[in-house]
Amino acid sequence: MVSKIALFNHEAGLGKTAITFNLGWMLASKGKRVILLDADPQCHLTEMFLSFFAQTELEELYHKNQNIKAGLAPAFEAQPHLIRAVDCIGTEGQERLYLLPGHVGLAEYEATLARAKELSASLETLKNLPGAITYLLNQTAQKYSAGYILIDMSPSLGAITLSLPNYSVTHRRAPPKRGS
Ligand SMILES: Nc1ncnc2c1ncn2[C@@H]1O[C@H](COP(=O)(O)OP(=O)(O)OP(=O)(O)O)[C@@H](O)[C@H]1O
Ligand SMILES: [Mg+2]
Image (cartoon, rainbow, N blue to C red; front, side):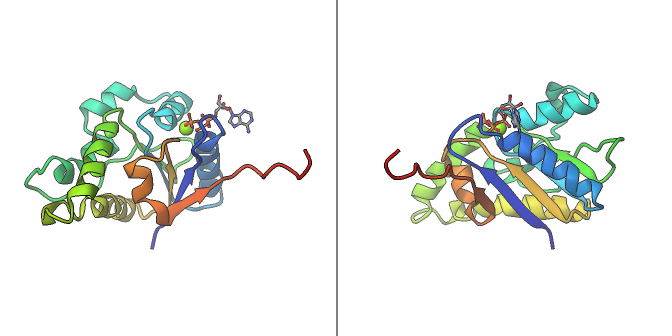
């Protein structure tokens, strides 16, 4: 059974992406099989991973459909086939670490998901769009025998972030001390 851990904070620039990458690296170094999922349309985790390992360009992944948006397309674009595991990007230096790349267009699915949540009481077919994300992650984890999926979230409280609450680790700043 794969453990999914999402890293979230609604303030930008606090280190979510850096922590996701480094945590994944450390878990892989300790023998765990880890998938890093870039769930932020800014794609910073994908850029970091690609620049670190210098294997391919982000746009090339878009064309190969090797990204989170392409993986979810059967559900979000009503394509008549099953959701299939995404082909993740591997690394030579750390063979148990994989990247499930992001896509700038994931922001479009965020809007779709928000509308689906509003309309799901009246349209049955929209009820399980959030479930499509979990299904895709489980299929992909199975393909790579991954023990962990670490999810780098966007800083917005959008529909995708709100669809993954069971996985989220929310970092809060300590409250100010009294009298300060
Ligand atoms: N431990 C650290 N020490 C020094 N700099 C750091 C550390 N962690 C992150 N940074 C730097 O802080 C900046 C923001 O980090 P990062 O992109 O990980 O934040 P983020 O929370 O993912 O931002 P966003 O909300 O925009 O996605 C980056 O330039 C990163 O290199
Ligand atoms: Mg980030």
